[in-house]
Length: 459
Image (cartoon, rainbow, N blue to C red; front, side, top):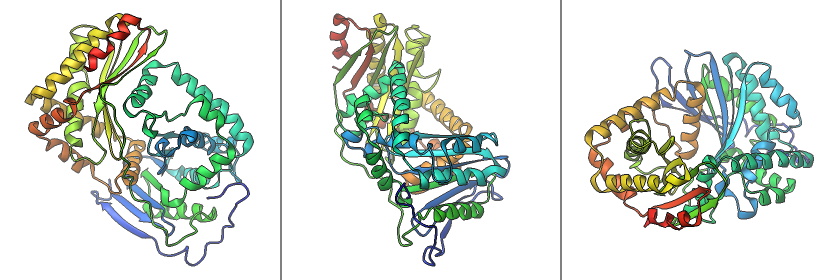
């Protein structure tokens, strides 16, 4: 990658022009839904899904780096870098980057997670070459200037403050810390005020050069597009930046993760003067590639994934103890989390926790009914298809699949996996996951007597 003081002249050698390798991963009907992958010399992967029936296209670049890859002193560097790539290159200023997409009615954004980062633009299909040029320029030619680091520091500190002001969001960071402790998975993606203030332009540049090598990147594009044209445009952009230097380089393998310490029976309370108490009660879940993930998805949907779910019915519909109550899963390379969130009046927190714990224990011991499981499978299949009705969602699916699994699965195969889940498989995963001793995170204005009783929920 290029940075100020280390620009590489765009002179692709004959080796760099070596033939790329293209595969059809999913063969759609009449080309619709066809997913192809091309691996360029230099290790850059490009995956596309063709959908001629739409007039838009979404182009994204996924980086194999997240907050999990940070040392304690670098906490927040991945997210900081995400901001800085929008601040300018040799070819474009920050205003040039934003105005180029605004001028064609496009949308451009990025997000940072614990194990990956994504930059994307959604445009009319006719404006796809512009989106490719702008996003590739950002990824390969960021200057990361000292003055931009200083200015953006203020914006990131404001983002941290905004998150801290939203206890319904902040409690999930607290729960990650409760479960993982002072581990990279337990630290916030945004970093802290102290770590962000300590990050320098030089340290961020080194982080950029290490993690934004083409072998660590996946380009994903979905919509009314032509795979070969996308490949040519991306290759030209990366070669112009001098990024494809080693024709023998191979893509990095999907992340395997490391052994992560997970807590049981731990309670963390963050006292805040809020109107509600925000709680997450949960336990270790399953890893991203675990074969039980389909059954886990059904279990999560039946427990807290909709208005007919057990938790919603018991906590909100029957008793009116909370407005928002739901369950969720987070899956990483080597581990996962299962959690139940609720926001309620502080005086009701122990009733809410008792009901949630009773439901989890009951399902762990007795399982779900066949009707609940069938309804959850139908809900999960429907929401999956409806969630893929735009090019942005399709780009996310193929990009994340390539980066995290190294393979693609068709929507029909996904639906078949869900439909094949049996009641016995759901009951087995319920015993394995919900039968564990939970941990608890709480943010709110709990008094000493209330706080002392929180351990009852995890006993």
